[in-house]
Amino acid sequence: MLANLPCAMPRFMKVSDFDFDLPPDLIAQKPAKPRGSARLLHIGDTLGDCHVRDLPCLLSPGDLLVFNNTKVIPSRLRGKRGKANLEVTLHKQESANTWWAFARPARKLTAGDTINFAEEFSADVLDKRIGGEVLLSFQQNDGDLIALLQKYGIMPLPPYIKRPKAGIPGDATDYQTVFAKNEGAVAAPTAGLHFSETLLKTLKSAGIHTAFVTLHVGAGTFLPVKVEKTTDHQMHSEWGTIPAATLKLVNDTRSAGAAVVPVGSTSLRLLETAADDNGILRPFTGETDIFMTPGHQFKIADKMITNFHLPRSTLFMLVAAFAGLDRMKSAYGHAIQNRYRFYSYGDACLLEREKI
Image (cartoon, rainbow, N blue to C red; front, side, top):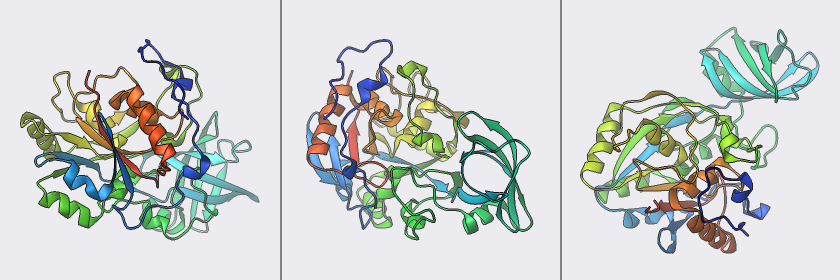
C-alpha cells in the first residue's frame, strides 16, 4: 500500500515519500473499449466510483475542459550500424531533420556513425551524451521526415506496456486522441485518450466548453527519478503553445466563476507555466520544464482529469501537489484495493484542487 507520507510540508521532500506498492497486473496493457467506458475515480472531500462517460453529470455548465491536441508520431525506429542492430526513440526535435534520441544499445555509438533504417532512410550521429542519448541528423532521399516515420516508425508506447518489437496495429489509433492535430509528440497525452467524439458532443450539449493547447510530450515523461530529493530532479523541457482563442476562453471562464479543468498533466503544466501571479493566463509559446510538487501554488486550474500514475514518478508528485498528499494517499489506496487500472492505458481520476 502507499507509504506514510508526511503531513507537514518540508522545504524539500524525499522521492521515497512518493513510493507505494503497485501490483504489476494493475498496469493496463490495453485501453478500455469503447473510449469513455473506463472507470473514473472522483477525488474530492469524498471518493466517488464513476466512469469517464459520467463527466457531463460531474461537471457544471460553463466549465471549461482544456485538452492537449498534440499528435504522437511513430518515433521508435529499428536500424543497423554496420551489422549491429539498434533501436532509437526520438524524444526532442532540434530542427526539421535533427532530433535527440535514446539509443539501445548505445555503448558503441560515437559521433560520425551512421544508422541505416531503410535504403532511402538513415541518420548520422552528431553527438552523444551520458545515458545513451544521441543527436541524430536524418538523411532521406525522398519525402519528409514525418512521412518516413509514418512508414517505418513504431508507436512509442511506454516500457510498462509490453509489446512485440514491431508493435501491434491497434496502437496506432489507440495511442492517439480523437482530436490530435499538431504532430510532434513522442508520448500521448493519455488522459485525452478516454474522450470519444460522442462524449465530446454530449459534453457540449451539457453546456461544458472545450479549448485546446499544444504541448509536444517528450519521452522524458517515462524517465525514472534517480535522485533522493525532489529539489534535485531536473525535468526535461517540452515545447508548447497556447492559442489566442484558448487564452480568452480560460480567462473568461475564470472571470465567470466557472471551473477550468485541464485534461491531463500536460495541459495543466502548460497553463501553469503561462499564468501570472494574479491567475491571469498570458500568451505563451516556448519551452517549459515546470516541475510541480507539494507546496506549489496553482493559479489556473480548479479541477483536473488525469490517469493513475506510477510510484516515485513526477506525475504522482504533481497530483499530490494538486489534490493533497493525504487525499491522494487515500485515493490510490482505494484504487488499488478496487483494482483500478493504472498508467497510459488505464483508468482516470477527476481531481478537485486542495483548498489551502
